[in-house]
Image (cartoon, rainbow, N blue to C red; front, side, top):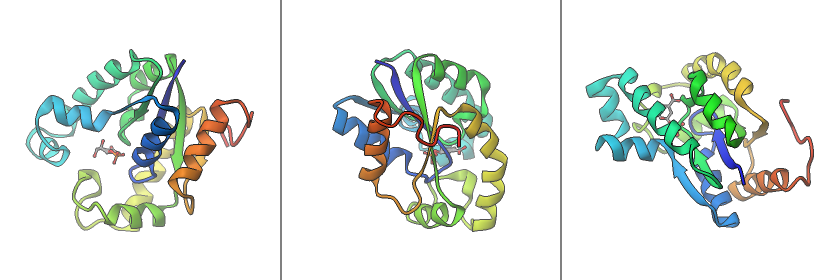
Length: 178
Ligand code: S3P
């Protein structure tokens, strides 16, 4: 069975939904961010601060290759994974790609709870910052996605069940490349 891959902007629900899907389907769950932290022995803000974003992207690329070689696994990707074409290519070879989306307001509210863990949002971030980065990123996300699901106003379980229905072929073209 192919991998189930989650992509999307920060705080769109990738981690919660990916974990829930893995739990319901009893599949293995992996997170690229977690693997980067394990590999480098540092938190993500520390890597950005001490080694810079390009170093982070280098390790991220290695990790993406590693997870793409897995099978039957639920893969939770960091929000910037799709910026690299090779990453998208290898993930697609062995996976179905779900893009999770949310409004900038929702992203802002959700990420407030975890302030400081996302260096690209900074510490004094605003809805405007999120909107700017999101509009730059959106073409990359849409290009990579097989399916698109909006998570605004939806619970984790609801989104996870939608993913499972899609995989099971119960909804043939639900929101495909909307
Ligand atoms: C990033 C998203 C983060 C993490 C890093 C960079 C991005 O992951 O990989 O802070 O470039 O969008 P989440 O999307 O899980 O927050």
